[in-house]
Length: 349
Ligand SMILES: C[S@@+](CC[C@H](N)C(=O)[O-])C[C@H]1O[C@@H](n2cnc3c(N)ncnc32)[C@H](O)[C@@H]1O
Image 1: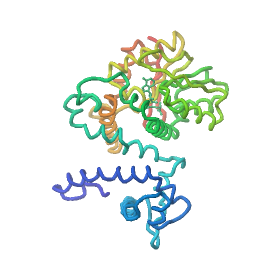
Image 2: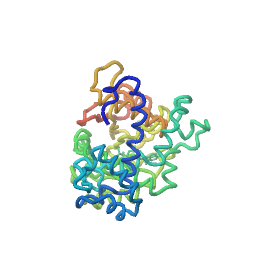
Image 3: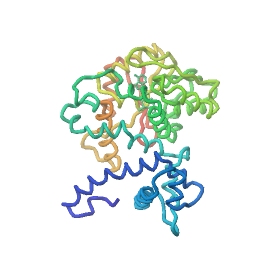
Image 4: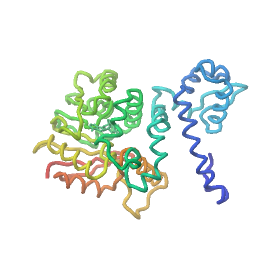
């Protein structure tokens, strides 16, 4: 879809609103496996429908929309996967299939539908309407009750982390460490990158039980299973296992300040007097600073995404540093990990 600002002002809001149809079209394509059906060559709409056991006419209409989005191309009565569409294939290098399934799926989609309540109350969608917090890990509890949704969530996180992981591992400076725990490490993509870069290092993912099977499968696929393990646990109820270095990537932005400090205190307990905690997040720009529009866009909407899903928020580097200090930690260095990520390297104060 063209940039809405290039059309007359009265139509811009309408165009913005209609853009809500786009993620659902991509979600349906990802959910049904349309890209995988086309991976070996172009097919007619009815052939796609018979492979996927979908309604022929409705499938043709979805393919028309995907063609407008540039995910497929028309070729003599058939549809072929475009270069862009290949990123919806399962397991493709850089695949965003799981991300599309997560973002357009039941949990996230319903949460965004309650944004108004979230803005009225300042609370996540789960609690914004009732006013009551159901538990400390309400969003992730829902995943515990829905193994398919949990698998999609962790797969989406792992896919998003894979490309950035080598630069994060480098910026985390693990040379002198013998053991590392990736706290909230999901399927272990970052841990696998750390163990690959440092052949003497041993590591563990600490996360909720619903990440365990996927993590073990990923360790085996990366050939690090002899040095990698998984400990299931709840960060709000227990300290993570001790290690020379604890990694904590994309976890703190999930939570409000009070819960973030509680998590950081537990990490501080686990690193002991000599260990390090490396918090990895993309810091938000300082207010009033000049940043590329694409970065401003991602930070602003990711911030709302955190609000509706978990009650968390995006934070500036100064805000991360303050949270760490409130938890009794001292930031020794902030290192850029390439792209948007920074590593906040902390020890006990
Ligand atoms: C946004 S994901 C980040 C995953 C991974 N670190 C990455 O960057 O790809 C947040 C992670 O925190 C985990 N998590 C949430 N609540 C938790 C809790 N109470 N105890 C342990 N882990 C938790 C989730 O299961 C999930 O793997």
